[in-house]
Image (cartoon, rainbow, N blue to C red; front, side):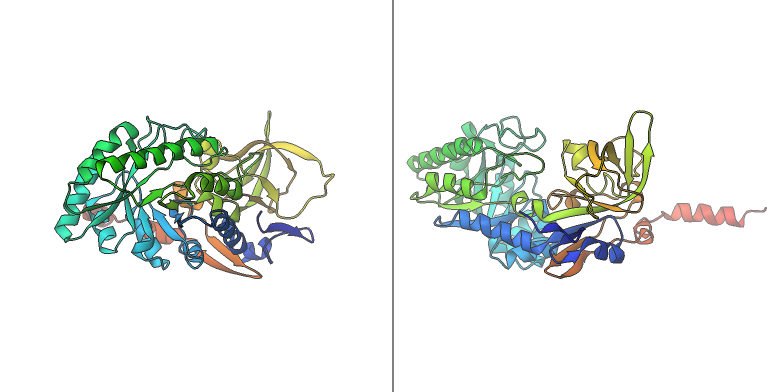
Length: 431
């Protein structure tokens, strides 16, 4: 469920017409619904009620400070995968002891920052990382609370670019090697073993891979007791899918029942790292139609949004529902067309072969389910400014990321002194 719907023939975000926002901020822009974010968080939290559990919002899904702060005020912690995300969580009001630091490539400076901020948990993904973390912690006179991320070699049955729990993926420590790493960790200074973690992928549409991975995690954690290693928490990751097109993703309630059937009564605290399932359907990308181009074999809807704004269709062959901002009659004729942007790449498309009404030039469309892995993956390719972001709450809205002026972008570049000298020489040379 989301809060984007037609009212009197016009698309609204909660109580605000999207056309009104477009008049202020221009297009393209991302628009998020507070009511949707809050509802999805409550539904997830309610689904795991009864467990000794913590929820850490996966910032990589959408890292805007206003989105993080909205969830922080509802009790969410943060799951971060970089020093930059760590700082965003802090800026949004989440203290270090409510932050899980994940990721395969943490630098010494990032480790040090996390430790100084009293991080809740650092999820270790390799032996070299563990050794380095011990060195950093000792140098600071601090102790690093760690959970080793296990790679359970479970096929999540999702897109190959977002699966993370198979043995050929770069993430985590192979289950067969994990015991020895725990034994090493137990002997290292500056290291406190608190748990074990896993995350098998994103956009999962079946509970079976979770069941298999969680069972392996429980059995592994229990087996460590014979070595005198008693874990207090198990981090179950995130990855629960949403509906983009016709996927039949499990509901948070169904997921919660499965988790409770496996973990209720066990002597472990459990942690969750939802991202997409909270914010994915809470956002839309609003674009303006520039032209309808008739080709010899296909029709193109050329819009002002592009792959630099939303790379998911190009990168993942992802599907996003498209609707006009002004509602068309139910009997309106549909035309097969490709929705494309202005970027000089054949891969610059938002949809291919889509049956759509013949929206005219200067009218607007929305691409649904762009609250997650959209604005955070955007770039300024072709010197296109990043699209602004807007957050709606009831009948009011706020610009939560401004569109950067192109002159500001240009002024970030600096010519070296020798080029300036060469230019002066040209200007001073005899004509």
